[in-house]
Image 1 (tube, rainbow, N blue to C red):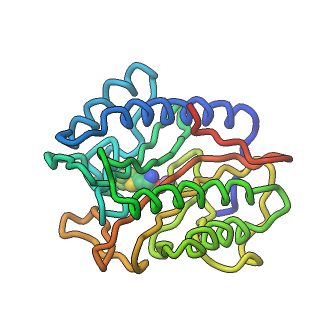
Image 2 (cartoon, rainbow, N blue to C red):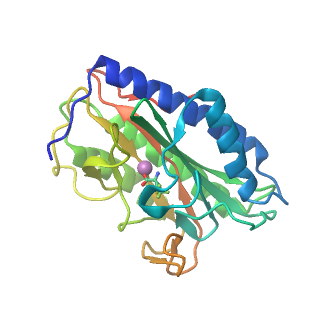
Length: 249
Ligand code: MF3
Ligand code: CO
């Protein structure tokens, strides 16, 4: 499948989906505190998405049972909002997708619970910075590999590792479109970026090694070495200038 270039109307719908995701992530972030039971986040998404007339993209995707992914500490991605309870010092990644008239917005943030260690704080900060380095590199005429390399350089330059087994992706008419967007690799690789490409950049960064393992639940991905992981994601569209970020509130 070739990479689909979106037109103005498609981008307008993705902007609506993206804004809903971003607004609800702000609400979820404010709920994060010691004692929170994770399934409460899923209830909030149900209520807030109904208000905004968007549909939860993740629910039933390949059998996924919830509206939001919630990954704590050594969990990298695809953790579930179940009866687990947050504790002071945890870091929690919240990944959310919304569909509006068939178009998808996808974003993720990582948040500290109460006071967290300086090293966890630095992991979260560097991962968000790596995402923005990727966004800055995502310009028409550049190669996709330049985005990947920018993300990797920032994470590894700060002593962290980037996950290899999960990557960012094209996004729009479905949650996962061409191309894959690795968070690692040489800058001279991949397609040339063109105006109208819509991409989800999503660095997953670990404090230890990059290898992951999947839990018996079939979803939860955690670091193989038990180190903490952080995850930030935005949906963007390539323009003639700086990429436009579609998942800002
Ligand atoms: N936002 C994620 C991604 O980009 C997670 C979705 S997985 C799901 O792949 F199964 F929960 F939908
Ligand atoms: Co994604």
